[in-house]
Structures are given as C-alpha cells and as structure tokens.
Image (cartoon, rainbow, N blue to C red):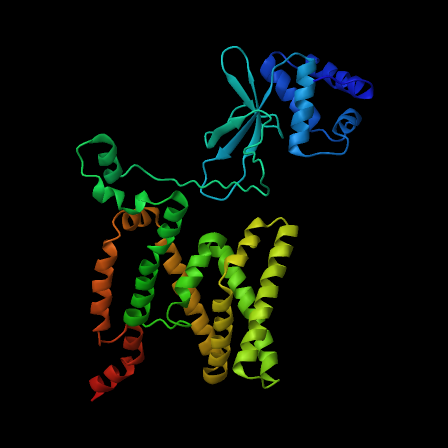
Length: 376
C-alpha cells in the first residue's frame, strides 16, 4: 500500500506517537488500532474520508502498519452461537512464533474462545459469475456428544442404519426447529395438569403453550411485560369498537391490524432506545394475541372484570411455567435424543382423559359443604 500527498503526511503524523508508546509488535498494532478508532483526530478524519465503517478502519490500520513494515492480515470469524449472524472482521499478525489476533474496534488482543476462523484475506466469502444477490447463512448448533453418536463414531461394527434415521441425521437448522417442536407436547402436558388436576382457568386450551414459545425469544420477564402492554391496549380498542356495534369478523380484523401496528411501533421504539430485546416482540403470534384480546373482552363483559383478570393471570402463569419446563436443556436433550418418550406422554394424556375426580381448586369451592355436614 502506498500513499502520497496529505494522506502520507497524516499517516506519518499518526505513526510518530504509536512508535513512542509501543514496545513490540503486539503493542504497536494495539496502539495503531486505538489511534484509528479515535474519530476526533484530524489525521484520522483525513484518512477515513468520511467512511467510518469497520472495513474502512481496518484498511487504514493496514495502511499504517504497511508503512511501518508490520505484517497484517484480515481474518473473518464466526461466533459459536446458534443465533443468526454474519462473519465478524478481525485483524491478525504473525510475530515469528504465533498468530496474534486483534479486535479492529478496540485493539484488544486475543481471539475469544467462541470465535472460529472461517477465511482470511481481502477476498469475499463467495463470488459468483453470471449471478447476483448471493445470500450466505450460517447455522450452528451446540450438540453434546451423546451415547448414540459416540457408538457410531467409535465402533465400526455398530449397526448405523438405525442411527442414520435419528433426528441427529437432519441438517443443523432443521434440528433446531425440531428441538422446539418436540417440546410442545411437554408444554401441552403442563397445561393439561394445570387445567384438569389443579383447575387453573386459562384463555383457550393451548394458547398458553403458544405464548410460551414466544417467550423463548423475548425471555420470560420482558415477554410478560410486552404481552401485558399489547393485551391492555388491545382491550382498550376492543372496548371502543363495542360502541360501533360491528360484526365479529370486521371487529377481529380491526383488532388484528391494530396488534400488527402496535408490534411494529414497539419494535421501532425499542430499537431507537437501544433495547434490542424489544425487537423480538414480532415473534408473538399475532392471531393468538387477537383472539386473546377478543376472548378476554367477552369474559370481561359476561363474568366481570375480576374474573377476566383472574383468567388473564392464570394464562400468564401457565405460559410462564410451560416456558420454564420447556427450556430445561437436559429435558430438551433427552426428548430430542429419544423422541419415543412422547408416546409415554400420550399414555398419560389418555389416562388423564378418563379422570372424573375433583380438581384442587374445587376442594376449596366445596369446603363449605363439608362444614355443613359436620354441623349436622
């Protein structure tokens, strides 16, 4: 890399203090990165030319180090995380013994343990001739070595035909989907116990399970807040629409549209306030929210506000408990590895279907009859 004119003067002006404050290659590169990220420096502004992107700052850092005859290379890494991501840019240099990695934003040395080097250099991740709009996605899954996979890898005589048809034979992205799906019957079982044995009242039969699935992304505390806010505002709109005497289908359509607009507004304001967790509100099932608002409003009109609040709290409690149980890593691993366990749940559900006894809450309701019999 060569520069001339004002750019060369600015580069030399930046290198002078870097040489004074560095003792070896590692400290030299760290100091250079920190100088380039100081956007208040006039020399940095001149070299960046208004482009403050990470790739341009890395280019200027590479320029300074090339003038100082310090080798530097771009390294593109991915995080060992199951979330959707794009490759992260890092810088590295060989000091004669080992590769030294540097964060291009902070100058911090050392590659974190959860980073995997994918490719190096200036080349793009993928190049296509005769095509356009290339999209590359990364799918990762944290999978522990289980007994079935260990047997397949270590024993050549193992009959692997059965193992080939396990859920571990699916692509990683599909495995992540099934890890969620196989836990839905667990959540349904929780709701079944809460409703049939304990007598907890909820809005709808499986509505709490769908809300529990949304809590996987929003997290429990923030998800409860978002659900409460959206439902409360939706009830306000539903109360206003009641005065217009609309039919059910147009009324539901208006409420659904309002829920969509409200979710978009919450996502926008959360992003502006830096609350990235608020963006996950879009994962709430909009139709379920609409029907929840409608059912809660009807319950309010027919049974009163106190009963409606009791049902709403019961729904949130059931959804929270189902979410906590469905999120247990050991349970998820066990059900995903041995999906036939779900057949045991089916047997328990069939037995529950034959239960005709009292629920726990009914024991409290009929407690007065026991007192009357004792007095007689």
